[in-house]
Length: 127
Image 1 (tube, helix red, strand yellow):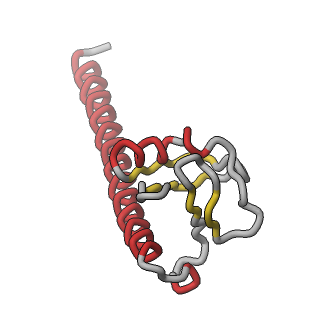
Image 2 (image 1 turned 135 degrees about the horizontal axis):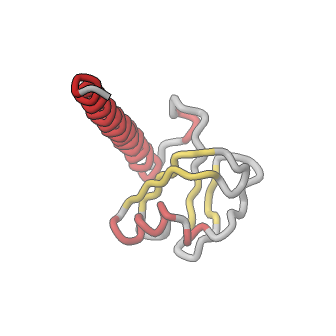
């Protein structure tokens, strides 16, 4: 391999590495922005629910909204068939909410195995 070929190969390798780093940071940043925006919207919904607004008034009807007491018992849900959820107090977003006041997690649902964004807020009588 000539010196020019080695220089070209090294330059291309360095360029590819930097391009991959830029792509990875961009994807992570965009995911962070989307997560923050969604969490902010859900925090607003949580405040409205605490003030007594009805879920039916929300524009996003695809939301699953549940309220749990401090023992993990379901006090309210807006979807039929979700009267009990397994081990809710050990979920990542609930643990974060217990520690910091609110928490988020991107995970598969234990109920239907679909990927969801979960948001939890600690309120005086539960989550």
